Image (cartoon, rainbow, N blue to C red):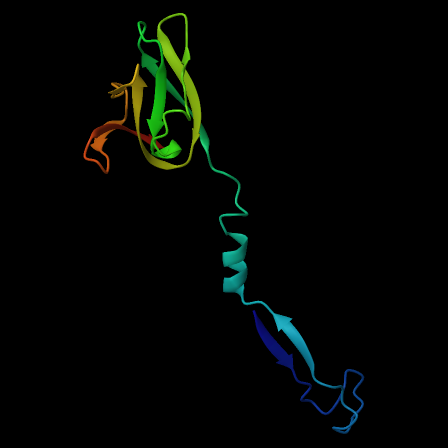
Length: 136
Protein backbone atom coordinates (compact mmCIF):
# COMPACT_ATOMS: atom_id res chain seq x y z
CA UNK A 1 0.00 0.00 0.00
CA UNK A 2 1.26 3.52 -0.72
CA UNK A 3 0.26 6.89 0.68
CA UNK A 4 -0.54 9.77 -1.62
CA UNK A 5 -0.68 13.29 -0.19
CA UNK A 6 -3.19 15.69 -1.67
CA UNK A 7 -1.89 19.28 -1.71
CA UNK A 8 -4.14 22.26 -2.28
CA UNK A 9 -1.93 24.36 -4.56
CA UNK A 10 -4.39 26.86 -6.05
CA UNK A 11 -4.85 30.06 -4.11
CA UNK A 12 -8.62 30.09 -4.70
CA UNK A 13 -11.12 27.64 -3.24
CA UNK A 14 -14.20 26.16 -4.93
CA UNK A 15 -16.28 29.23 -4.30
CA UNK A 16 -13.65 31.37 -5.99
CA UNK A 17 -12.59 33.09 -2.76
CA UNK A 18 -8.89 33.77 -2.46
CA UNK A 19 -7.28 32.51 0.68
CA UNK A 20 -3.89 33.11 2.22
CA UNK A 21 -1.57 30.18 2.83
CA UNK A 22 -2.36 30.25 6.55
CA UNK A 23 -6.10 29.94 5.83
CA UNK A 24 -5.78 27.03 3.43
CA UNK A 25 -6.84 23.61 4.59
CA UNK A 26 -4.22 21.45 6.19
CA UNK A 27 -2.59 18.69 4.19
CA UNK A 28 -4.66 15.51 4.49
CA UNK A 29 -3.04 12.18 3.69
CA UNK A 30 -5.12 9.92 1.44
CA UNK A 31 -4.56 6.18 1.42
CA UNK A 32 -4.06 4.81 -2.05
CA UNK A 33 -3.87 1.18 -3.13
CA UNK A 34 -2.11 0.62 -6.48
CA UNK A 35 -4.10 -1.29 -9.09
CA UNK A 36 -1.50 -4.03 -9.33
CA UNK A 37 -1.92 -4.76 -5.63
CA UNK A 38 -5.69 -4.87 -6.01
CA UNK A 39 -5.41 -7.22 -8.95
CA UNK A 40 -3.09 -9.57 -7.08
CA UNK A 41 -5.18 -9.62 -3.92
CA UNK A 42 -8.50 -10.21 -5.67
CA UNK A 43 -7.08 -13.10 -7.68
CA UNK A 44 -5.31 -14.85 -4.84
CA UNK A 45 -5.80 -18.60 -4.60
CA UNK A 46 -7.52 -18.40 -1.24
CA UNK A 47 -10.36 -16.26 -2.60
CA UNK A 48 -10.93 -18.21 -5.80
CA UNK A 49 -13.49 -20.99 -5.72
CA UNK A 50 -12.15 -24.51 -5.98
CA UNK A 51 -11.92 -25.54 -9.62
CA UNK A 52 -12.19 -29.26 -8.90
CA UNK A 53 -14.16 -31.36 -11.34
CA UNK A 54 -15.75 -34.73 -10.45
CA UNK A 55 -13.91 -37.50 -12.32
CA UNK A 56 -15.23 -41.08 -12.49
CA UNK A 57 -12.75 -43.95 -12.21
CA UNK A 58 -13.72 -47.49 -13.24
CA UNK A 59 -11.72 -50.69 -12.87
CA UNK A 60 -12.86 -54.09 -14.16
CA UNK A 61 -11.82 -56.70 -11.59
CA UNK A 62 -14.71 -59.13 -10.97
CA UNK A 63 -12.64 -61.54 -8.84
CA UNK A 64 -10.99 -58.85 -6.69
CA UNK A 65 -11.68 -58.51 -2.98
CA UNK A 66 -10.55 -54.87 -2.87
CA UNK A 67 -9.58 -52.16 -5.35
CA UNK A 68 -7.96 -48.94 -4.18
CA UNK A 69 -7.18 -45.80 -6.15
CA UNK A 70 -3.80 -44.19 -5.48
CA UNK A 71 -2.32 -41.15 -7.19
CA UNK A 72 -0.63 -37.79 -6.88
CA UNK A 73 -4.00 -36.27 -5.88
CA UNK A 74 -4.06 -38.31 -2.62
CA UNK A 75 -0.27 -38.47 -2.09
CA UNK A 76 -0.25 -42.15 -3.11
CA UNK A 77 -2.13 -43.06 0.08
CA UNK A 78 -3.84 -46.47 -0.35
CA UNK A 79 -6.32 -45.80 2.47
CA UNK A 80 -7.54 -42.51 0.99
CA UNK A 81 -9.70 -43.77 -1.91
CA UNK A 82 -11.18 -47.27 -1.67
CA UNK A 83 -13.36 -48.09 -4.67
CA UNK A 84 -16.88 -49.52 -4.50
CA UNK A 85 -17.74 -52.88 -6.06
CA UNK A 86 -20.69 -53.00 -8.48
CA UNK A 87 -22.74 -56.07 -9.34
CA UNK A 88 -21.37 -56.19 -12.92
CA UNK A 89 -17.73 -56.72 -11.79
CA UNK A 90 -16.67 -53.09 -12.21
CA UNK A 91 -15.28 -51.05 -9.33
CA UNK A 92 -16.23 -47.37 -9.19
CA UNK A 93 -15.10 -44.16 -7.47
CA UNK A 94 -15.72 -40.47 -8.15
CA UNK A 95 -12.90 -38.10 -7.15
CA UNK A 96 -12.82 -34.29 -7.48
CA UNK A 97 -9.67 -33.34 -9.43
CA UNK A 98 -8.26 -29.96 -10.36
CA UNK A 99 -7.26 -28.86 -13.87
CA UNK A 100 -4.09 -30.48 -15.17
CA UNK A 101 -2.46 -33.89 -15.53
CA UNK A 102 -2.69 -36.44 -12.71
CA UNK A 103 -0.81 -39.72 -12.23
CA UNK A 104 -2.58 -42.71 -10.68
CA UNK A 105 -2.80 -46.50 -10.36
CA UNK A 106 -5.31 -49.05 -9.16
CA UNK A 107 -4.28 -51.43 -6.37
CA UNK A 108 -6.17 -54.63 -7.17
CA UNK A 109 -5.82 -56.85 -4.11
CA UNK A 110 -2.56 -55.02 -3.36
CA UNK A 111 -1.12 -55.34 -6.89
CA UNK A 112 -0.40 -52.08 -8.77
CA UNK A 113 -2.43 -52.09 -12.00
CA UNK A 114 -2.48 -49.63 -14.89
CA UNK A 115 -5.79 -48.31 -16.21
CA UNK A 116 -6.24 -49.56 -19.82
CA UNK A 117 -8.66 -46.67 -20.45
CA UNK A 118 -6.31 -43.93 -19.18
CA UNK A 119 -5.38 -40.88 -21.22
CA UNK A 120 -1.81 -42.15 -21.27
CA UNK A 121 1.01 -43.84 -19.40
CA UNK A 122 3.99 -42.07 -17.85
CA UNK A 123 6.64 -42.72 -15.20
CA UNK A 124 6.51 -41.39 -11.65
CA UNK A 125 9.40 -40.21 -9.42
CA UNK A 126 10.38 -43.83 -8.74
CA UNK A 127 10.45 -44.52 -12.48
CA UNK A 128 7.48 -46.91 -12.23
CA UNK A 129 4.81 -46.84 -14.93
CA UNK A 130 1.60 -45.12 -13.89
CA UNK A 131 -1.62 -44.15 -15.64
CA UNK A 132 -2.17 -40.55 -16.65
CA UNK A 133 -5.39 -38.55 -16.83
CA UNK A 134 -5.84 -35.03 -18.20
CA UNK A 135 -8.52 -32.87 -16.58
CA UNK A 136 -9.70 -29.72 -18.34
